[in-house]
Amino acid sequence: MSLIYRMFGIKTYNLYQKNKFVNQFNEFTISKKNDYIFERIKSLISFACNNSNYYKKIFAEYDFNHKKFKSLEDLNKIPILEKSHLASNIDDILIPNKFINSNFSGGSTSEPVRFYQDREYWEWGELSRRWTYSICNITHNNKLLFYGSNYDNKSPESFRGQAALFFKNQGFINAFSSNLDDLVKKIRYASYKKYKHLFGYAGALNFFAKLCVENNINFNFETVQSTGEMLLPKYRKNLEDKFGRIIFDRYGSREVSIIASTSRHSYNDFIECSFHNYIETKKNDNGENQLIVTNLNNFCFPFIRYKIGDIISEKTHSSNFYSFKELKGRDLGVLKTPKGNIISLLIFPHLFGQINEINDYQIIFVNNYLIKINIVRNNEFSDLTVNKILDIIKNKIDDTYKVEINHLSKINYEKNGKKQLVKFINS
Image (cartoon, rainbow, N blue to C red):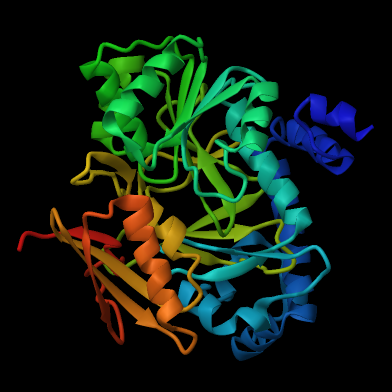
């Protein structure tokens, strides 16, 4: 039976059943969606209060009675969950079960943090990603070209990864660390494969379009979907100039997966992924709307009123979905190293976020040959940690760079409270 579901892109029967519900949910009125969101959050709050030491303490401290939670407006009675709270309360937030796994955020909007997710959450997270495909008219086994990372455990360039791509009718180009000439050859070869859809990080896709223009490489994509960092207006213009008005922006985070996405029917607006996350906004000192999200499906590590670190415009709604027009997120871009390697700067949160011996970090490119790495270390830091850092720079970036590691008590943040994860200065 499982094989039958997999043939249609659904891994398990549970996913199949949830997918049927998502299809129904998409047709709900906004009132009916609110009813579902309320009941889901009410269950989450009750479960957290009864099982999480952190939420027991916080609810008591703020005199919040979960039994009196009567509407979504009552969420305002619960304090904001900051990233710093995760780092200092990880064991108290956690509600263990036998299906949990740890994950991490890269730290592109603040300090990197570790958290937990379980099988139930991952199934909903998978459906939220599939939802972004469906609203852009991307279907399973539909000639999808991935332009992205090769640093995960299940490498797309491994034998297993290549076999999976073959059977899924998909392609992959490593956007993180390719020599420029080799990268152009791979893109040109991909153009002969008649891929219908392109998916990748915003800064890397912008560079992809630039190489296509400079080298007269043409595709006939039906959609281009961006993720991982902010799709800046200049990126969108460059991509639209090359590929047409088919550029879609997928927004989420590792902590809660997909939050919102643009779509065929809402090209310029982000639609909230309301079966997985509920968005609130809270004004900061500059009068901007801080995005606050409650994930509806992570009961092992509840994210209730979690501050992501990004700014959005006002949230509005139509007859059957919530949306917002503008996202002010993070942009890391790409780097050409002295050896000519093309590196997506997302490699830094991706790999440094996995070093448990570091509490915080910042990468500073002083010139073409010197990288300063500021770190806040913890008690587990050792010479082996230094070797991990040097391995990232020398073996995955460019061994031409000289590396200077500085130990700091704290990383200085920008005035808006965000950390500039990667900085470029002239020395």
